[in-house]
Image 1 (cartoon, rainbow, N blue to C red):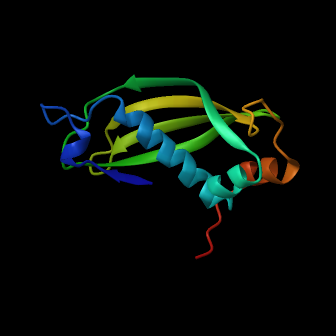
Image 2: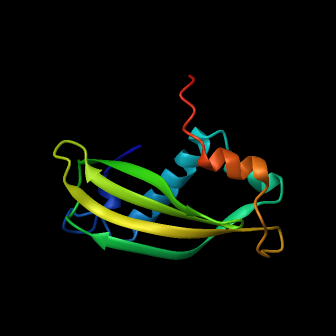
Length: 133
């Protein structure tokens, strides 16, 4: 997926504000789910939400106003109630790595208690992206 950097994304020096990368990771995870036929809204309506319990970021080079970033997202680990996503962000034109990171999420119910993911959801998460238009 791609993220275009707007002025609102940057600090006074025109460099992407560090916390914004977490928002970009969130968008990339949602995109990952949607590519596999999973809707965050439908999961929530069915009683499953995801909470981030751990996140790591390694800043490799600054992204700046006007650039476009590509985000590669993979499912690095999966348990019965947890998912760990790995993210690599690159500047689109040069391929320069901007940020690498990961986020571990747990599935919770409406009362925010950890819950196991059902078999169809686990299978969809492991599957390839849906390439149908």
